[in-house]
Length: 188
Image (cartoon, rainbow, N blue to C red; front, side, top):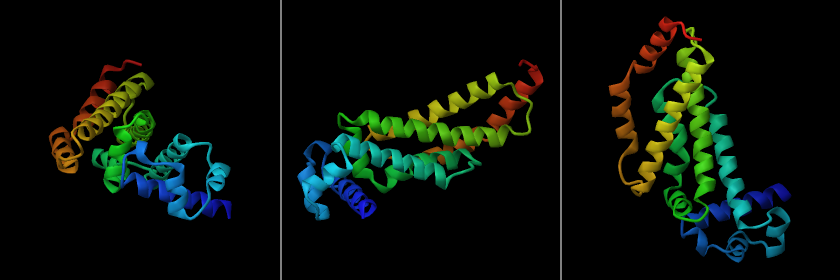
């Protein structure tokens, strides 16, 4: 029963977040929306920030579970933006709130996982030092994270999938070239 109530609270919070800014959502709003009393809310969550943090953390966990292996930069982006694309208003409400850091932590975690998975797949056959692998991974992670934040800063109005697909076309083979240079240099 507790699991059902907790899921109802999260669903109501996400629904309301897609309707209005985070600072306009109250515990009472959530309780009314999902048909519980305020005490039930407090049984499951300490406060609203802890509720939103748990929702975001679980979304990151779900994305990581959905994408156990990443084979392309396009897949990295798709994984990183899937929650935002499905919950545009909610993400913009979080992004424009004092709780932005919660979302940025989520996005960083997803970018880190997806890029790391992609780089490991592409570089599996190359003899590259851990230092080089780390430098390459950090670069792509920051690029992915930065591109998504820039898109959100612009109100999520541009077609990020189209932009990223074009960028991937232009950069095709670049990671393999970098890996070949790392292998050829023999620096460990």
